[in-house]
Length: 274
Image (cartoon, rainbow, N blue to C red):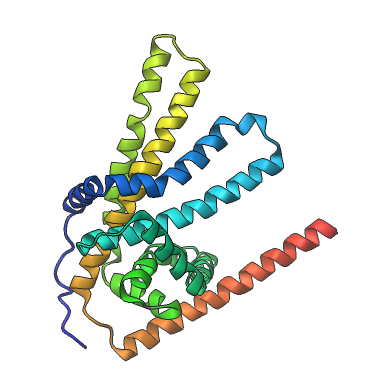
């Protein structure tokens, strides 16, 4: 195994946020293009929520979920391209994201079952895995590793640094919370001066969805890629023994997740038809 400087610390969250903001500004027009469909769909859902049927509401919700996933993966692709100093058009980010998802859907299925299995196994393993496997998508995009290989690589990168990564994520969460709270200022101004109306509601919706779609979601993609790069730089390569050990633990939790999911579906069906 290569010598890995495990004693070194990750770059501070402040520096990573500053770097991500700089990259965000440079890529702003491409980010707007990528994020616009999710923004418009989310805005339409908010504006017309009271005037549509329950079925239409569910269809829109699933649409937002699917478009949100594609958007996030496209932003990950764009973040990687910009860090490499490459020019990537929004449509290239989109097709790259779609290509990787369609070619390796298994990674997302395994990610769900392993995390779910972790939560079933006394909750704490699920909390650990939610963070430890968060970089599997970056491994897929950047290193071209698939399935178990991507998941175990993410586990290895976070191994011994879970609390450091957790604090990085908490710091970003605090920053995001302050940004989100700032969207309340303008609607609050209307309310304080007695100008609240349906316009205030729509204004709040536009601000909240706009900040999330065009700023926070792209920033999270760039920020987490920055954390991933730091982990790669400081972690070195895993030995075969470490990989086998990590795969065994991961498979156990996946089996637990599959069994728990099957049990939940069976229980739901029994409750529905009994």
